[in-house]
Image 1 (cartoon, rainbow, N blue to C red):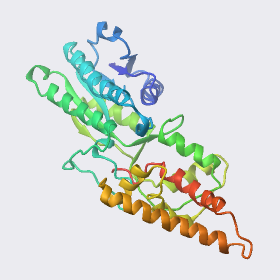
Image 2: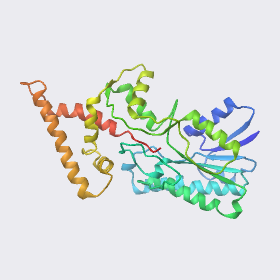
Image 3: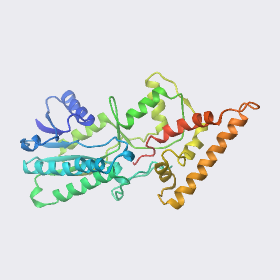
Image 4: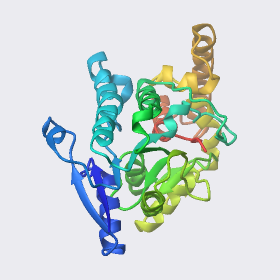
Length: 330
């Protein structure tokens, strides 16, 4: 029986992987769990494990509102701690060390109308500190395992897309909540790579069995769009959401509206240069306000609607929609 150690046992992926192995393959694997919190793990004996899976990581926060001190915690957990755990795995003679990274290392392409296809030649270009912490971790691990004395331990890095499945947190949980509450949703088409949790569990099992090393990009066979996922989740919850194709033009306009101006404008223009972002934001904001004013004056003429009401009705779904990552990496 193969012995596997999962670091980060309380995480969604760690818990799901352990449950998958103990349920589907109870006679083939011995699965232990551990935590990298505190210093107790440094005194543990990791010898005898075929594979050590490190799912410990820091994510799922509003990264735009964090302090510099909080940002450094991402590097401490996602980068420094990952290398320290790898050093111990090597020292204790583990056969394989698996690190879960993210496609966020390629940056944020959520504003792209066309699928962005990732290949072995695509260079990482993190657009925020979370992605940079993952990218730096990969580099430090590769440098460590490039040393001759680590030849007996193999390194496998997985760049994961959005994970979804029963009990999932993060972005998928946000989509579930929206599917249960929203009366309508834009049909604006985008594509993103995703990975069902059971597919990931089986992928990890096969990786453990093979003992392979290298860089991997697991994902489901088909790409998914945000509207399709919303409508599917609503149907499963017994809800009905009206497809609102008429909102699609406002989805693009919403990139330029104040509220999350920096983030949305950068996504829209593909640049953070103030000389482009600021005029564009003012211009598109003015266009949106003019449209709302026109609707307020003409919808029930001669009665004039309150423009604030119209703006809220049109703007709320757009802002909510814009908070969801779109057009993910492939």
